[in-house]
Length: 98
Image (cartoon, rainbow, N blue to C red; front, side, top):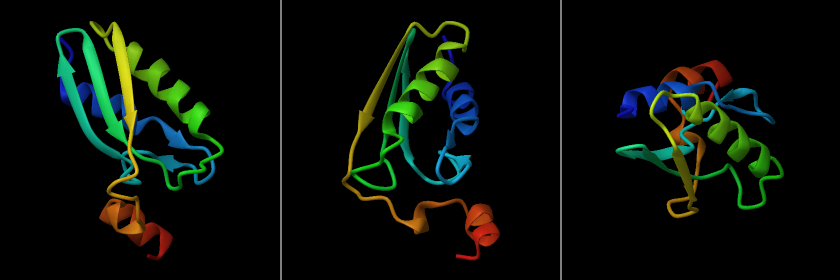
């Protein structure tokens, strides 16, 4: 069975194409659950009208499915709580001057 840490590592490689930073470091990933061969990711986008949502979802599925034992990837996109720059990792906030 894949681990949550393996999934988070794969998600860290997924970049927001508009900003060029990891969706994990940006704080877009709210939760990851692994049950047997299924992964459920609860996340958000920087805005409800994110033009790159389809690209990000496809990249998530591609990278997470590469993990040994993963057969199913579900992405639950939520906007409550809404994303804000405060959700970014301290390192990324410092890098961006926030």
